[in-house]
Image: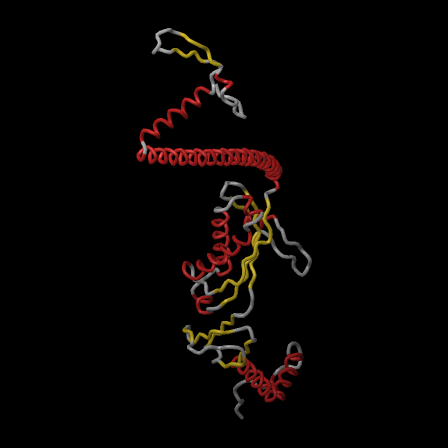
Length: 347
């Protein structure tokens, strides 16, 4: 009788390694069908989970099939894909992303914010060549997932570098006093629009800037003493300038008042002289009219009136009668013939 070729399960020795392996193989032989069924179920579950993917309300997705993006838009909800062929990239488009410059907000474990390695982000020069720490935050959301995923590599680093460059450029156009006091809102607004333009036109990143806010601005610790001295000096200079301005205003006010008084006096004198001139001209015209109608009488009247005015100022007169040829004849106290004027006689 020929011996059958090949190894059989019963040929395994009962000693050594066979003591362990033989029962195991026998168990697998008895349970093989069930294990195959279980493996099939596990495989089907894996395939099922690979076919479906879920997107949350704030998420959108891009699906690559053989490396090329599909035209469909995948919004919130349940979607399908081909396992091991399609590749899904999920992007939280409605989530607000926050970047901080010069400080770090406290984390959940309570570690703090202002760290030494963040100081270099906030240190910059103002327009008057003074050092200042400007700490600000930037909030953005993703509005173009294709650009965000496939056209930019270091996304957050790019946004951070552009924001720091824009802020340094803008702060360089303002004085230290403006950066520390009145112009912070203006600087933040300008940084917002400039950063947004740079992230859309110069370096497209597919993001929309929703907020740029300045947290604080102060002078570096090493320069604080010099800044305090400068502040005190500026206050003193401003006080002296205010006093000088007040003195200037007083001097200008007094000069203007004197000018107005002199102008008023001159205008009054001008009006009086003009009125007198008009009166004298009217009197002269009246006399000329009278002279035209009666020249002899008018001439005699004018002569007598003039002589009266002259003789009223003379105490005595010597009258010489030339017709008799006898020389001096008498003295007349002429003042007795004329009443003295009430205001006195003008000599």
